[in-house]
Image (cartoon, rainbow, N blue to C red):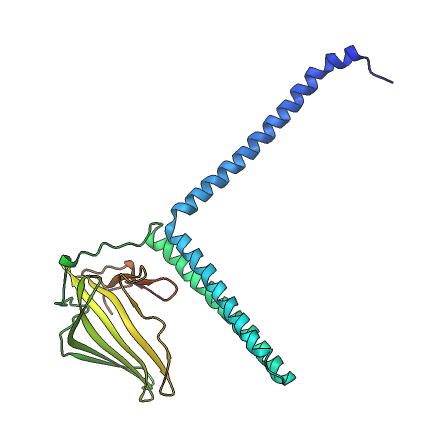
Length: 268
């Protein structure tokens, strides 16, 4: 039955009100969801530490994928089918391991952010606040002193020699330490480390030139960094007055050299 136009006019306002109410409710819910998303995004955008961890994760996975593609390119140039398959399988395994390493690094950074806080890491380096006299009782460096550390099984020997040499890094004059690691009496790592102490007694780590060797040949210089170069930054290697619960960065070269320190107790 065809409705009377008058009746339509009579009920139209009620339907309009209902549809308007539904539309308003939906718009309110949608706007609330967007607002919540905006608030979450704002929170994440202000958490520089966590965003840094995520950026490093993306970069790490991208590098892993890039290495995989290069490896596959090498594999397809192997004419022997068995050798080619073995190469491809190894490339896939290496990619999986690299991704696991990336995820592990992210987990460490994310956990560290919970202790460090959301702010950026940008320590103020004032050259007049530093000295080459390093007399922190927990980390004293007297030029000419050599420390030797042995692993429990005696296979690894670390020789830590405080030299009389200095080097200016990020406008700060630093003490140069020669750190040599031997595995079964064969040199496997050779590093120059650079330290300075601030007026409060904290010992800072300003960088390292490091090289690792395999079978007597240079394998990598990864881990090398200098504060002030490529936005790399110094960190505290030992506080003047450490306390249980202290947690801080010892170096900051994102994706290259990142160490943290946590004080557990002062009785060891």
